[in-house]
Structures are given as C-alpha cells and as structure tokens.
Image 1 (cartoon, rainbow, N blue to C red):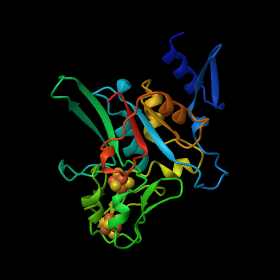
Image 2: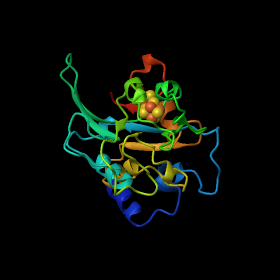
Image 3: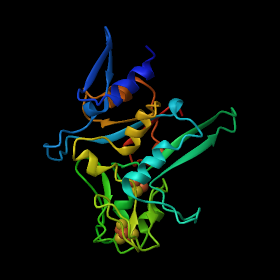
Image 4: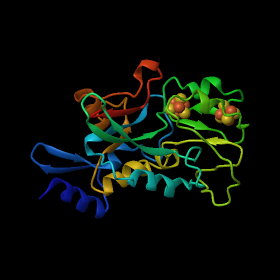
Length: 244
Ligand code: SF4
Ligand code: SF4
C-alpha cells in the first residue's frame, strides 16, 4: 500500500495510538505521539517547535493558511500590505540556481525573541515551553514588536472584532501572531497547520518537542540537514526548515 494512502486511512480512522508499525523496522509516528498529554503542566524542559520539510510543500498549496484562519478566526480585510497574517506562504526563487520553492512563514517562537525585548508593557512574553505570545490585556498597540520582529510575524488589528474565537482572543488596537495553537497544545493536540497538512497528504509540517530525544522532530533535526531562517541574527527560532 502506498505510504501516503496508508497514512491517510490511518488518520481518517481516528488515530488513538501514538505510533503505527507499517512494516518490520518501519514505524509511522502519528501526531498524538508529538503532543503533550492534556493533564501535564507546562514544563521548562520542553521546547515546542516545528520542522517544515519544504520538499513536501507545494507552491500552490494554502492548506496550512486556511487551517490557521479557520482555527484562530483571523481573516483579511482586503488590505494586502497590512493584512493580518499569522501564517503566510512565501514563494522563493534562488537567483543563482533558478530553483524555486515555497515555504510557510509564521512566528518562529524564538529563544531570544526581539518582540519580547522591546515590549514596554510586558505584553509580549515567552512561556517556559518556548511558545511566544501576546497578552491582549497588556498590549497598548505601540507596534514596537512588529518593527523588532525580523520575520514579519506580527499583525496589528485595525478593525473591531466581533467574531473572535474564545481560545484566540483578539482586539482592535492590539497586536497578534501565531500562538503555535497553544490552546491545542495544552489539550494534548498538535497545531492546526500541522494537522491539516498531514490530513491533506503532504506531511510537510511536523510538530513536537525539540528537547525530547525520543520525539520524531528531535530525531529528524539530529539526522537531517535543517535550517533556521536568518540564524545569523541569533534569535534561535523554534521553527526549523528542511530542503532550503
Ligand atoms: Fe517574536 Fe518575531 Fe521571534 Fe515570533 S518570530 S518570537 S514575533 S521575534
Ligand atoms: Fe508590546 Fe503590544 Fe507594543 Fe507589541 S504592540 S510591543 S505586544 S505593547
């Protein structure tokens, strides 16, 4: 059976197990294995992150963006240059080789986040497990963090929001960004982008604990070539890319 077909059938059947043995020595790690059990408290020994395999990411595919919008309730207001964008697809062409590829960019959940450094109110903060968030009650909308973020990961909310999701509070005059679907992580689930990409048959986004030597993301980062975008800036992003 084709690997992707097997994976889709397994997932559509409701994955109750963390792993699935496909053949002797070949084990498929299904997404529940990567998530924290819901009863466990947030821990500083954990470093949640994403590994994006751009060799599996198709230029025309927008599945992760659509899933993020649906999950977190953000949407555009027809202002392309200043629009809200928790995650966006970027098409790249290497001028030397002519090679083209596409990758999703979202908040990189940096170890040394400049957004947190510049925030005058403490609204921008990093959880002990590496997830970088904005406290809407403390944000005064100064937008320093938007200017400080080299990944253009944050957006300003210009309009009154009347259809926000309870798990993703947003408000006019404040800044927001990808939360790594922290509400799902805390329920033992994986982020909506990773889940949708997997269900769509691509499997280009892997979520997990970068610190856990037994996790699939840790093993892959340890054994294949991965890149942090603008690693030279020293922010140590929790989002890694393979195939750039
Ligand atoms: Fe902050 Fe930008 Fe890093 Fe996200 S990507 S943690 S907004 S500096
Ligand atoms: Fe902090 Fe909000 Fe200003 Fe960003 S816009 S720096 S989160 S107060």
